[in-house]
Image (cartoon, rainbow, N blue to C red; front, side, top):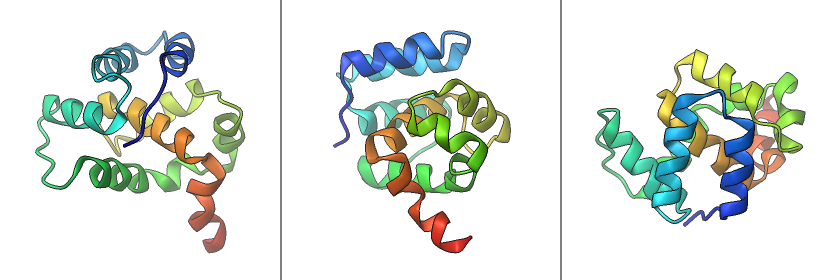
Length: 125
């Protein structure tokens, strides 16, 4: 289970105030008491997806699907430093995952450690 604190939710809320989908996602994460996997499942169902694997595996799989975009050099340093706004807009625009799921994906990556998450991409380049 990947757990985020109310302070982390507040940090995301202040940075992503211009993104209505992010605010909806943060409300769901809060309702799920910071459990990112549970919140991601709720949001996935809202956007018409029917995840058929365990919550933690599904969110990890979704994040990995977005890895090439998340680990781009121009955004990576911002993510490492806890600045999410640029990546929020960029990832939502790619349509790799529904806009309501971008926030839990970014929070998941941040919790895992951006550099650790991006390691497989570093080995490829």
